[in-house]
Image (tube, rainbow, N blue to C red; front, side, top):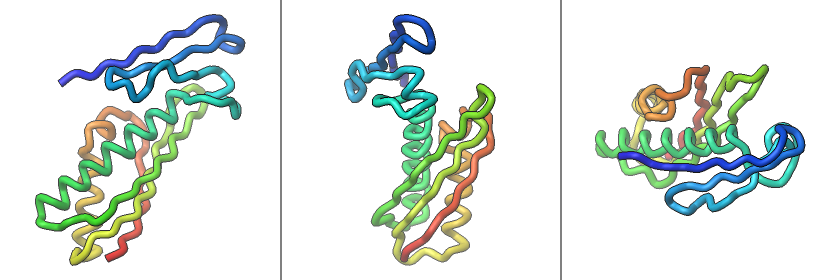
Length: 137
């Protein structure tokens, strides 16, 4: 499987701007700029998109892990916070809230750890990955 995305940039890094598009059309010339990346400008930025990708990937991996062990997750919500420091992504912290009936905390923690280590985006990121989770049975 291959997925495609396109970035277009016009101008200098500080005064210029660009847009991002994806094969699916979910992103269609969505604006990004220096201000959206390093200040509070309107638009997106690469780190925000990495966070969304990591949260989505981890959550799907956890759902698969739970299903394989015959647990039926009612809801899994993951928020990601990606840190950019000195020109490098230094950390991705995932905050998980899960509603999974009938699972022990120990088994849940084991499956969360597996998802953190084995979702494809976690494998891609060469940075510190942490997870805090809350299990609501």
